[in-house]
Every structure is written in structure tokens, then in C-alpha cells.
Amino acid sequence: MKAVLAIILFFTLGLSNKQSIHTSIFKLNTFTKVPDDLMGCGDDYYLSKRDEKQDKLICRTNYFEALIHVNNKVILLKYNDKASDEANHVFTAGAYDLVIRNDALKQEGDEDYTMTAIITVNFHSKIVWTNRVVGGGGC
Image (cartoon, rainbow, N blue to C red):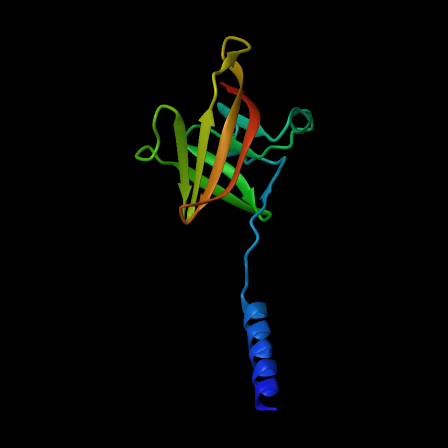
């Protein structure tokens, strides 16, 4: 009888501990509205050509700042020149790091270009999202 009670107690405590653990879900959301101070020269990134046609951004940069939406919350990141190099452009805000690695740019006009890129979002130095995206930019 004691063994049965011990097993029931063990499973009951085990289940209650398991249920109390809160795992936060990370979702990088697309967006269409960009603040005026981020408009102008810079780069726009999209998850697909279809999103590009619908102007659904996954990221917008103006070279000094980057804008993303995490769990429907706006995150404005600042360019981190100490962490950036020629291949990787790093933007930081609190626990978030956004790393953009552009492939070769394809010139589309005097000041406009298109490209593909790999965007990675780190939270507390752990990769929480990475994806190949399409984009364009210029001045």
C-alpha cells in the first residue's frame, strides 16, 4: 500500500512540476508598417517573393538600425560595429542579436539592388530563428 501511495505521489508531483515549467514561444512576425525615421536608404527583407509583392517585411534596416517584430512586439535594434564584419551585419537590442549575411548584390539601377540573405535572430546568445530571405535596397 505504501508503495502504491509513493508511486501516486511521485507521479502527481512530477506532473505538477512539469506543468509549472513555462516555455516561451518565439515567433518572428511579418509587418507592413515602418516608422518614418526608418524609411529612405536601407534594405527590406521578405520571407518570399510572394511576401515581397504583398510588402510583408520580415526585417527593415536603414544601415544604423533594424526593425523586426517578435511575438507581435516591435523590436528596434542598433547596428553593432564591434560584432559586425564584412560578411555579417549585426544589430543588437537587449538580449536580441540580429545577424544579416547578404549574398552578392544584384544591381537593378543606379542606386537599387536585390539580394538574398540569411537572417539569424539570437536571444541570450542562442539561435532562436534563422532563414534564407529575399530582399532589396538602395537609396
